[in-house]
Length: 145
Image 1 (tube, rainbow, N blue to C red):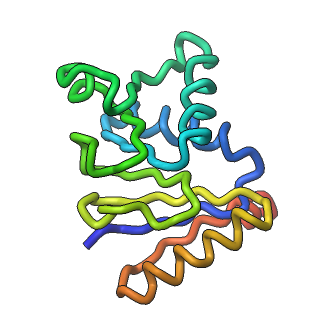
Image 2: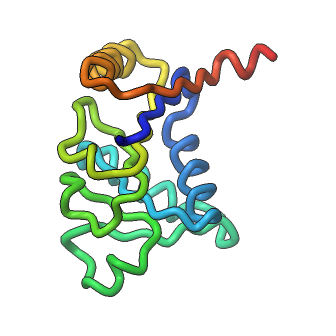
């Protein structure tokens, strides 16, 4: 069964996502990033603006050749089933991503906006109602310690 983790109260969502992707790539993990096209473009742009030593190889499903797609540790795609990777799915969208259950892990990143929090509650309920154990990472609680 897919391991589901929510990262709540993220102060700078895009910076946090880039750090997660750098960490995952450094560990050799293969990550599929899904969400609305604007969110995917935002993260793609941020990854390109990192220092050369922090660069995270990535590509976009549907626009990369099969060899590049397979070799990239991070793949952006609106439809997760288009990704050759099934290790980690990072959801930046408001809805439950289609086919998430094919992945070993699902990470949900939740910023501080009311809209983001409301949508995350719906996704949490969806996973919980289907029997998924949910791991909670509250960044606000970390800052208090």
